[in-house]
Image (cartoon, rainbow, N blue to C red; front, top):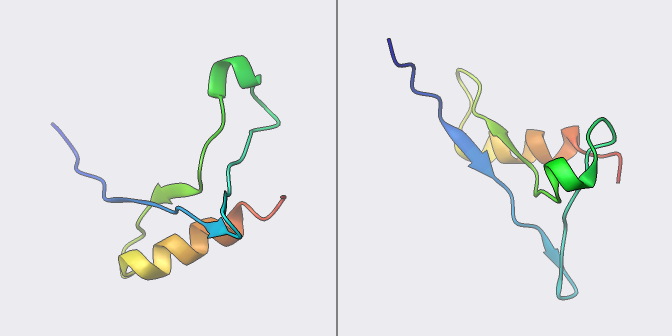
Length: 60
């Protein structure tokens, strides 16, 4: 059985710079750099999910 999951991706640009993240738990050679992203939770709009995902990545 296939389960469909809706996702959001955040492209945050400030003063011409794109926000990218690395993961502490994985080497950069495996995970590379990423932008904030994740699943849309039940009852969330895509916009709400994007903001939540951005703030969940606030270790920057």
